[in-house]
Image 1 (tube, rainbow, N blue to C red):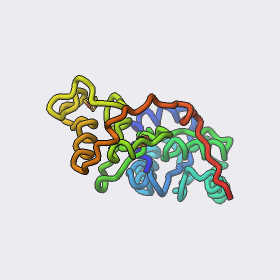
Image 2: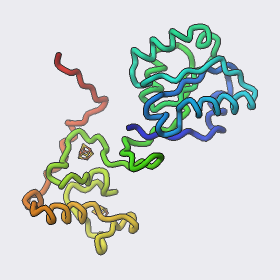
Image 3: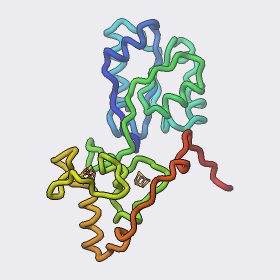
Image 4: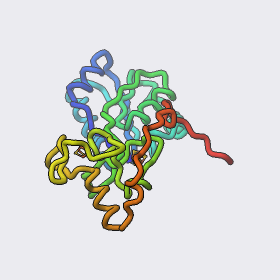
Length: 215
Ligand code: SF4
Ligand code: SF4
């Protein structure tokens, strides 16, 4: 899931300074799980904006704010409330904000900072395990991603700073490459370590990414 957190309210308010009527949009998927843009956060935002002298013309939690057609359809269903607003404040990830800005001619304001693709360890605790690099090497690294978990993103490690299995960048954390070595060793699978991982082919994750599934 996409992990996000709300921008400081003062920052949101400063961006909304030129407008007085605002329509609020949240996302029922990732932003709800992160408690950054679900029903509860929309109600709180409405209260805070009202206390700051703004008028909230309405609100909407879209099932998946990254779904562009759904955003168009759901915004249409809120016709007058959206028309009466000078700005749309979106509490969803950056993809959701851009679905909204594509679907509307109103000023669209991002209310969240989008952080990373996260695994959920337990409710309210998220960890980055994959950086969406476009060329997965987990099969060579025992299922541990050095691109993400090693702060230097080393494809071949460990670096010279590793100390008794700990990472030199964050001494609280295990060195990713020590974990990889240990896991492969425990499984009796050291073969993947006998060859160096080749340099990245960055053409495999050129941006912007797109994918069209065959029918
Ligand atoms: S190598 Fe790491 S960052 Fe790249 S796709 Fe695999 S898990 Fe994600
Ligand atoms: S100690 Fe290990 S995890 Fe830390 S930067 Fe060096 S190789 Fe990466």
